[in-house]
Structures are given as structure tokens and as C-alpha cells.
Length: 115
Image (tube, rainbow, N blue to C red; front, side):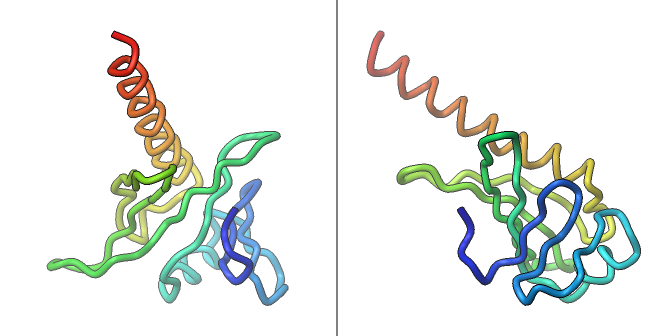
């Protein structure tokens, strides 16, 4: 679960912690909000949610977004893209990629324990 002050994306809407109006993904308001945002959480799955953190990072040629999910002691990540590419479809694909990495790591660990 993300901490209380973090903006959250769930069911194709951005929910801001200050309680202002929700922003629909893929709208001009969404891409405008991303221009000044540094991070947010994305809910993947129903009815149990897996919260993926998306964080903007400054790199040599500009700002790029990355997705992160920590499980126990391992931090899993995936490249998400530039601000203008963060559509609802892209968010879902990247979040699923991170979850798949977690599953693969668990399978590998399990196979090492039980050869």
C-alpha cells in the first residue's frame, strides 16, 4: 500500500491526496499533471491490488519514468518511458512487466530451494 501522501492511479483515474478533482488518464490534464509530478502509485489487479510506484528520474538526455516494486528484500524495476508516452495502456504494460519479474524471481528461488 502506498503511503498516504502519494498520488494514486486506480481504475483509469488519478486520485490526488489533497482531495481535489480526480484526473482521467490519457486526458490533457493527466499529461499536464505528469509534467510537474515526481512520483505516483499505480494499482494493478482486482480485487487484490498490487501497488507499483512510478518515479520520474533525471538522466543525461532528459526525464524518464521508471516503475518499482519492492518484495521482501529485492527491488524490481522496469523502464516506463518519457512523460508523453505514459498512457493508461503503457502504465498497465509496465506494471505487469514488473509483476512478471517478481514472479520469475520467486520461481527461480523456489527451484533453487527444491532442485
